[in-house]
Image 1 (cartoon, rainbow, N blue to C red):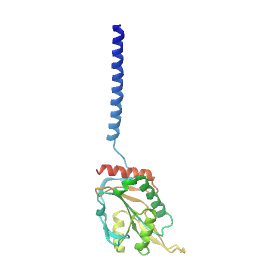
Image 2: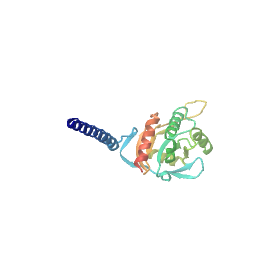
Image 3: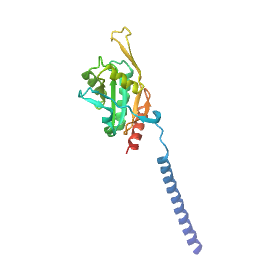
Image 4: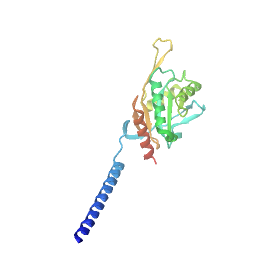
Length: 212
């Protein structure tokens, strides 16, 4: 009788120890995941650098807008133009999807679109174009050709006008990447053209958590 009771107690002890091991292993796994460094899907700048500030004109309000106005948010900075036949519509469609993935988190995100074709991109045209994709996207117009050149150079953006003799008039060749800027105003990475929207959203969520 005593042996059966002893074996029963021993069994309970073993079960309890096994349960404790499972709990501790699960906790160690979660801690390990939390401590594991995150690598951006974007092409990381190593080391990150302060994002060059600028002041351009909002297509929505006609008022000056500076990069520093968005401190505390993740900024996605893109250069394009409204009559772009393929690259710009594809890019804005991708970032529309990124915003849909992020949902309410977009209150801490700002997509900025600088036109490389201010000759044709009037404020009304810019606002109508970007709001077609997402009403939270903001189009920016350089006050002068010199301002455009200065901002583009600061972000390593190439753009050049080409007249191909088409009925649509001239086209603008331009860099199709997006600058990824964290809430502290640091330029963290470069997002390639047609990057996966889910991976872009993952990078943004990481930078938002990091900034808290």
